[in-house]
Length: 125
Length: 125
DNA sequence: CTAGGACCTGGAGCGCGCTCTAGCTCAAGT
DNA sequence: ACTTGAGCTAGAGCGCGCTCCAGGTCCTAG
Image (cartoon, rainbow over all chains, first blue to last red; front, side, top):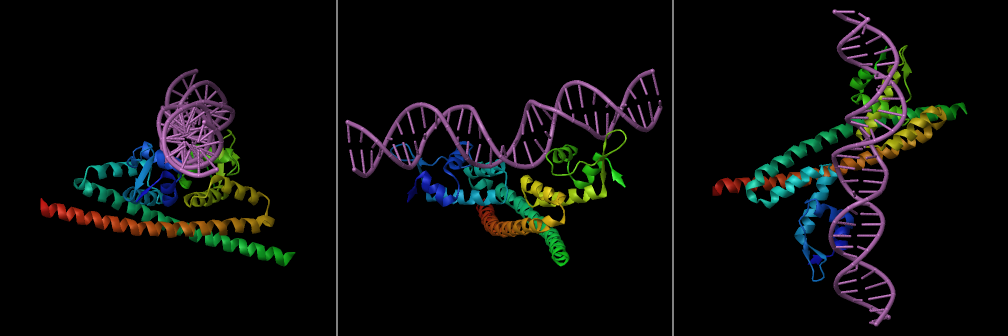
């Protein structure tokens, strides 16, 4: 099964422009082309896109994803380095989750505070 | 107690340029000035900066923080709206934490996979 | 045969959030 | 008196990650 760029966009949640952009900058491999010269994405292409969108969601910078993508091309020998990148990134993600959770507490506190102010206002009104 | 811009930068973790930038765009109130025309931040200023950095950490866009800042100026009557903004934002933050946690699972899975590849390589070598 | 629509390319443009520069003033130390 | 260094302003510039545009090609349906 293969997919047009529009289908690939829909399945990956990226825009068509973004797909072409990612290809231009070497973040995804140029997909096959059909007889008319149009991009034809394979399941494997979509798999990589799915992974890339995960990395993006977690805030990995494009240049790091690119490094990762380029290591992929060099085969299993780069598995160690790729693992290293992911492990490091996982630490970042964990740290960010922790940070967000701390901020959540501050939000809770502030929201409570506003609830009190609101109640006082109503009482005074 | 009052603080020079350099001290305020250090305490808030923002750069001096960023402090001036935030002031320009109306995200923080212009602080007092000393006899030489230099900014002199109060404890209260620092408190607001601390809160702003929390919001920033959680990814709140500057324009939303600005709206919030402007509501502050209009007193307690805007407490309801301010609470609303924070509640909505808290939902965003919770959603993002959940999303990151999903991504973490994917990372774990991939890291495992690379660990296996590495072990195989060593076995073959 | 023609019209429409999806897709193509190369390159320009954009919104965000800073960050840096030039050229100045002011205050303090020696 | 002079140097040094922090701070000042207005405004330009930047890196990121897209997003959009012009102008063209190709396939399909009527």
